[in-house]
Length: 126
Image 1 (cartoon, rainbow, N blue to C red):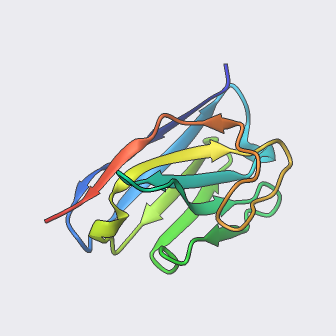
Image 2 (image 1 turned 90 degrees about the vertical axis):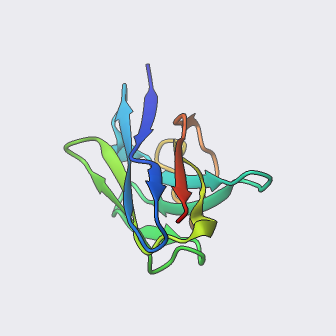
């Protein structure tokens, strides 16, 4: 069974950091672009960051550029999102998704997200 599982969310103060993990089971992430998305209450889902399968090249939304870093660990079949200098407006449910095999990121977004994780809550508040 193909599955993505996110972890690492939680409550953090403004200016703090969190690292989210997106672990795959049932398939290897090596052939897939992986995207991180977030959705805050009352807002549309937003593509936050994406990493390509071929060269690991990353893309970021303007709202997180310079603060978030996406990376992948092939041995662990996991993609990470390191989030620094967190702001209250970063509060949302964060989900990872895998695009269609061999597809590339479309900026910080995916064109054909086939597999989704269940999401993890990130709350930035003092």
